[in-house]
Amino acid sequence: MRYHKIPDETVRRLPVYLRGLMVSADQGHEHISSQLLADSVGVDAWQIRKDLSYFGDFGTPGVGYNIEKLARGIKKTLRLDVIRRAALVGVGDLGSALLAYPGFRLYGLDIVAAFDVDPNKIGKVVSGVEIEDPAQIGALRQRDISLAIVAVPRLAAQATVDQLVAAGIRGILNFAPSKVVAPKRVKVITLDIAMELARLPYYIPRAEQVSES
Amino acid sequence: MRYHKIPDETVRRLPVYLRGLMVSADQGHEHISSQLLADSVGVDAWQIRKDLSYFGDFGTPGVGYNIEKLARGIKKTLRLDVIRRAALVGVGDLGSALLAYPGFRLYGLDIVAAFDVDPNKIGKVVSGVEIEDPAQIGALRQRDISLAIVAVPRLAAQATVDQLVAAGIRGILNFAPSKVVAPKRVKVITLDIAMELARLPYYIPRAEQVSES
DNA sequence: CCATGTGAAGGTATTCACAGCC
DNA sequence: GGCTGTGAATACCTTCACATGG
Image 1 (cartoon, rainbow over the protein chains, first blue to last red):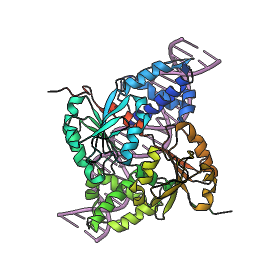
Image 2: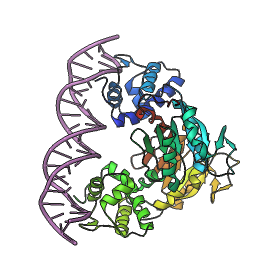
Image 3: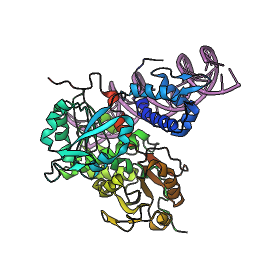
Image 4: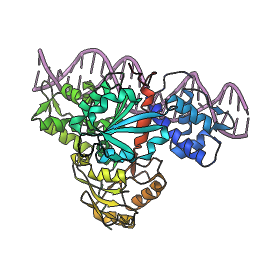
């Protein structure tokens, strides 16, 4: 079933597999079966095999998958085979935490620019990145930066996205709790942290408060 | 179709609707049509109507929805009709940002306890919450705290979850980039920020770098 | 023999179109 | 006339079972 359109849900799982493979490689393994990888990342073995079947065959029957080869294949599929340069807009509490967050490097993603409207912050260096005036966003086009992270207040989010779109940004990860619109050619993923916590109580059956013994 | 099991995807969207309703209420509106709400939150009108049909009829044909009544209904369905007390474990960069994050309040979620292994942090107050020794996690049972946020390093995540489960926690939002296991009665949602950014490049067509004019 | 890759079956969610009510 | 609520149709994703290949 090679060379088909890859389901969104599969794309969502691929970074999980990639992380599992990297952990396995760190432990010195060279090959891994779908069953073993499944156990380590918490999905089912057939799900992994089906997902991988959408974009090529990496495994050897009776042996399993060569970890390095499979990791390269997934990276290529996700277009993570080149280092991606990203910009951050909004260096508040969350923005600062994102700048310090080491996890992005794992996927070849590198935050190399940061912007904030606060004049007191401009010029300061946070986690090795100098904070710039948002007026400079227009120049991203010349700096080989194709991704952006938006961590500004809700009411500033749409204006920020508009600026980024005008600057030629192609993908945006939006942490502001609001809908933002962008042209079809720009992919926007909105991630509202509070909303994730908000759906947790639904799954907690009655007697939600624990009574003392 | 009332009184059915509500699809997971619907549960995921309900907090979005709730936020849209609150914004609308702030603007002084009393009623809203599915079409208007749809425009403001970025989903389709029939999707909203279908989602709401799973757990009761709130609307009036020809008029729309009474905002306050619908908001109450959604809150009740999500079990957000009572204030939920939550604990945070791991007060690093991300944890501190979460403590300062105002968005949780919107959904009646309140972070009232924080824990960190670092002796230098214990006793300090961050965003109004005193940081405690993780040895105190066991006492959460007596403090009417049913939710927890895990923001510790990957290798500490499972041990932290085990402690929280033993303390009677019923729902966990995990930011650590790893699979964690918990008994079925405890709902765990894992949110790996880097993974969200990692799937962005996939959706960016070729010529990902913008060439200068 | 063991583990992959994949058709086919089954389940879940999205989308449509319209009957029914204000 | 306008807007809701929902059966029916469609699309999508998951799960199974097994043929195929090392």
